[in-house]
Image (cartoon, rainbow, N blue to C red; front, side, top):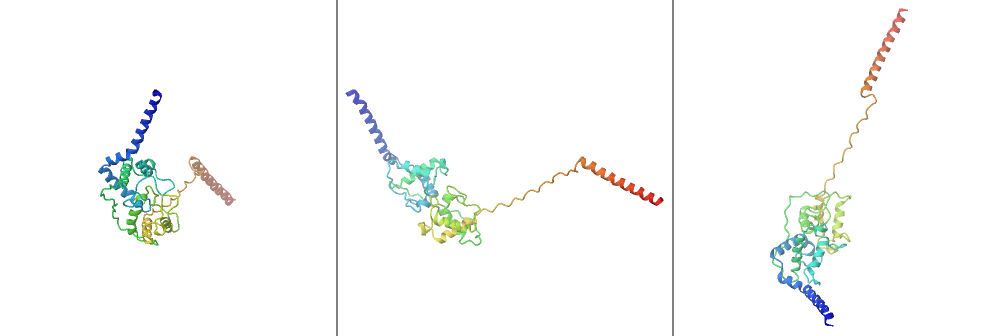
Length: 280
């Protein structure tokens, strides 16, 4: 009996050791803590990519609240999985490079550590405000409401994280293009106001639960329209090369010579005929 029960005891001891290791892992990681460099990188990445939707301190905006207690044994793995792969069918896109996003594994790790620092209340006093680079004055687009110069600032604060600093596209769609619509400004405005259900594009108007006023949306639309790519010039059809004539080349020379000789003979014969008539 002792020989049969001993392996069972050893197995139970190993199982308990594994369980304790898993349960105590977050506490050990919390005691070890992230480095200052990781927190600073995470704060910068959060400001550039996440704050626009989740709020500057994770309090939630058009995205969910992140400064909370995560009900998970390994919250780091849960947050990392969502950041890397997104949530299909929801407004959360994939940010990991392996899934088509812009962030490396090291950047995602720093971002996760920064987000989870809210859970323990250990967030350092780091600036997380994105910086705005002034643009040259933008000429308003005719027949489009809004101020594109104000819109450029609003675009940086609310849209650039997904659509790129100039609308060139990032995890969101490219906005620098020719819009196939009679009134593209109205189409863009409706998309910003109402979002696109089942896609990462949220509703941004205050009337639909978003943070932007109607005037702010008009300004963003004016800025996007000022980025519209010009239509490509129409390509001229190439001038067709005339088909070679049957009289071109050596054959044409022979035919021309024969025709000239025939004309000469006709002229000579005609002169002879006239001469005989005059003699008679």
